[in-house]
Length: 62
Image (cartoon, rainbow, N blue to C red; front, side):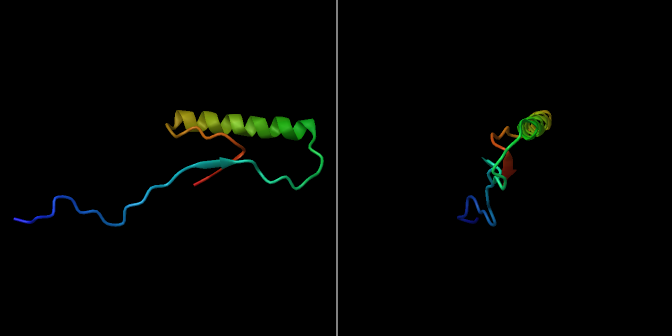
């Protein structure tokens, strides 16, 4: 009988991190803000229906 109760190899964990997109322009038009918010809403709705975590901010990375 072996003395090892649990053995684990190559274990890792990943996190979803949200952050604001880098602003390359000085001026942001209202249409740009509305388009960005619509994309965020679509992404969050899709994630919710797929059972994924809802992450705040413009860009999500793992």
